[in-house]
Length: 199
Image 1 (tube, rainbow, N blue to C red):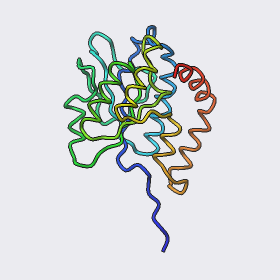
Image 2: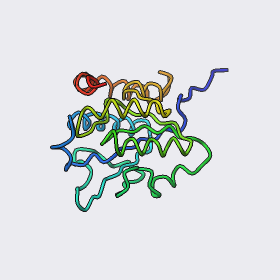
Image 3: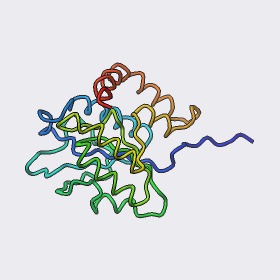
Image 4: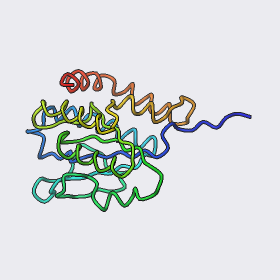
C-alpha cells in the first residue's frame, strides 16, 4: 500500500509584523524585508497557510505596506502593544496542538522579539526568518536573533522554512513552491547577501 504523503509541519502560521510604509525611510534595508514578505505571502497562498498581520498604531503610522497582497489573511490587527500576541490573534491558537509560527517583520529587537517570547511561552514552535526581519539600527538584528535562538526559537531562512514545511517533493503544492523559489532566486540572493551580512 502506498504511503500517504503529508507535510512535515502540521500547523504552520505566518506572522507579518508591522511592515508599514511609514517605516520605509528608517528601517535598515526595508525593501529587502518587503521582498521576503511578498515571497512568503505567495507561498502562504500556494500552501494555504493562515496569515496574521499587525500594524503598530495604524491611526498614526498608517496601514501595512500597499505592496503586500493581503487577500488571504485571517486577522489584520492594529495594536499598541509591541507583541503581536494580542487577543484577536492569540485566540486562534487556543487549542492544545502547538502551531509552527514563522515570523517576519520589524523591528527585530522589539516587536519580533516580544512576539516570539509570547508565542514560545504559550507552547508554540517559532521560526524567525533571518532574511525577513530588520530594525532601524542594523546592529540590533544579530543580537536579537542570538537572544531568540537562546530562548528556543529557530532562526532560519525563507527557503529553508518552506522546504521544511513541505518535507516531501511528492506533495501536490511542491511544483508551485519550486516555481516560486526559482522566480524569486535573484531577489533572494540579493536579500541574503545584504541582510545576513550582519549575522
